[in-house]
Length: 429
Image (cartoon, rainbow, N blue to C red):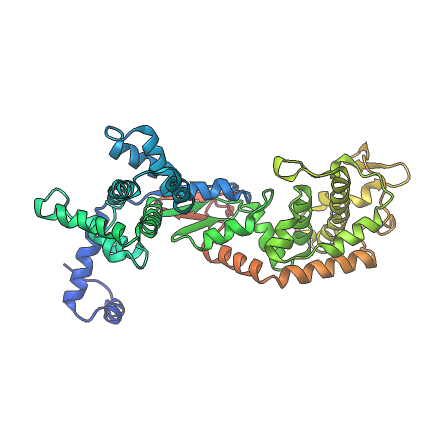
């Protein structure tokens, strides 16, 4: 082989990790072998929108991979109802064990059959990975035992008793439940080698903080930011326009709890201001929050939330207007609407066309200076700003988005992006 250029820097880097040529050679052999293994399973999800339960189910069932492995192994030998029970046990082991143990008559026999089946599933689902990688993914406490079970040769006569005795001992020592949980978690861990989240984790649903916590705990993930994610990133950094928009969307979908319970961000100053300012207002249907099965509420609550949404919407128009005026280079003058309103006639003129407004009660807008915040609105924004930038949990989640995220990613020669990607005039990224 002919070497060109200065290789000293590469040799110096190798010497930091490997002691000699033998170690380097061993690692090259290992890496070349790994390259010939089947690729790990990648799962792609997008538009989670804080819906935790469907997202959690995708993670727990390995995006359908686990059930497919069960079908492959047991379709010809195990009844369908038992296959379904086995799948659910793997997805939710703690919860399913409680239910199963109420109905099983011979628990030891059930444990033995189930443990054998779980080991078969684990062996099948981990077969595309190196033994080293599987071992690193194993839960502590049962790692040696699982490693033995996965790699013992059950078809070899002198190993059959050894294999069966391990399982029997687990049952005799009353550790079967813990082992089922451990091996089920390993199966789920190996089912998805890498998770791609193609944008929009936040907004609409009720559980964005829970989704983000699950992602921070996931073993291998990348995130392509969606517009809703970038909105929360801006809010967490203190951008007041983004703060307004985040709060308005939370009010729109009646999930203020995401802010208050999830991130400790108080909206009480806004709520108090809204209910006082618009106490005698007839609120337009445009501000009535969207209603779903999970947020049924009384008429009084609905109007209160609508007033909160109206209050933050007006503040958002003002704050965005100030930002647009400050930065004419943004070219966003079309977002300036408050100065287009005829406050006497209750109409707005946009591009030469006049429209009637659905809501004409604007007690906080000064027609001669429509983008100026009132002192009370200034106070609301100050309090919201402080809550957003001082939320430790939000800061941790947004830091994770920065660490694991980007506007676009190229992974295994696939271009991943949510809605758009930044490009130059010459069409390069």
